[in-house]
Image (cartoon, rainbow over all chains, first blue to last red):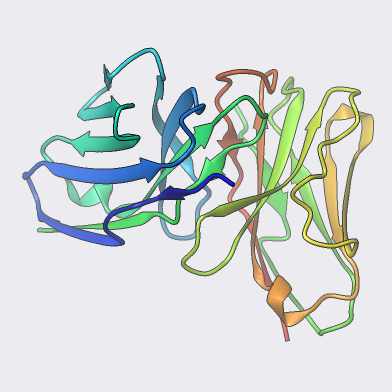
Length: 111
Length: 115
């Protein structure tokens, strides 16, 4: 079966620093990946996505990198702010209609 | 516009009781998903509805779980004879077409506690 995992369950960064959250996936057939942010008491919120025919995609203060060779995905947050504190999930889709989610990384921004 | 809404936000029930959780998707979205999130865990897919097609029930953990979607809009997830291991946050999401790279928009979830 598929598995989506994260290298670090928790990450603490100083306000203003850049954050990097990593994710490994096991299904080489996965063709679409998404990062979600989940704040306490709320549902996951879409951040950014990337298709398997790309290796990098940038949004506002966020960049997603995809390395299909090692089946690795990362989310980079520039100039991390206190409002970025949340749990971040990567998810993958491989032809089916549902997403497979990782267990999440808790990002804590230290003022 | 309005996002995905879920009710109740919290539900406490006794073991063995039945519960119903409701999801109102974004208007116009044809696809609806249910997920379960246990404490400190990722999201576990439960069931998927797309238009008038037969639902994908492959994620339902047991026959105590069922869901329906009436009129292609509101959905109800029912858990019969609840067990303590059913305690989790149940999340609903909807997307425009449910295909390919459609973004799934999540509701705030219903926190279920089975005593």
